Length: 297
Image (cartoon, rainbow, N blue to C red; front, top):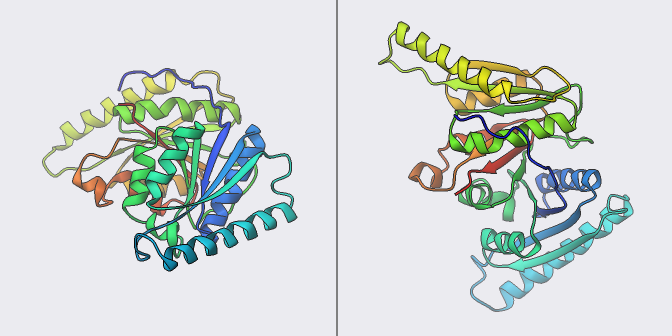
């Protein structure tokens, strides 16, 4: 993995939050609001009414859209009542169709810097996000995507000085592309950066060969960490053996990570489409939000 430029300019000035009005979407909404307040961002909230099950047109779809607008107005009223929208420029919209094309169009038209979505909702978008739609969002969106799972309780700020930013790397181009985000967020919040590399054990490798591989990966991590300059706290790197997704989630939980920054590649392989990838495993199981950064193509 070549040493990447260690910083990027974090400017989440336009944030898109996708909602299905569920409890999990509420967590994503509160997290998006906190980020919008921190970065003085413009907030766009979208609910997509899937066309499946309603036909191309007719009373079914019209009723679903009207019901969705009722939910959107209730959400806006509740957020205003609690003062969460104070000082935030925002827009709420309801669209019908497929979730990813609707989100993709807004990302393009509004020049969105960050998409925030909740996972494990009971219906609508939340349900779809358990499968291929989630992969489409964080693998195809050209901006970073923050996923918020059911195990996370929103806190402000999202990243505190007491714990930190957790960055798993496999030294791939997608990890290289995400690393500057991890460094910049750790620097901006004056928190610790913890870098993890997971080695998958193979029966074909002998102990000598395996030890050489581990030493080589430790050297790569040290080179990577040397480029992470200007941090308030000394970064830490960890090498663990195990299955990547499970190990990432386990170690992040043990270290009390408040944010995982993860590089992802564009969709290509069958495993990606079926949700067998490391990224999808981490997104579904992690106790904290995941910031996915897609590999440039």
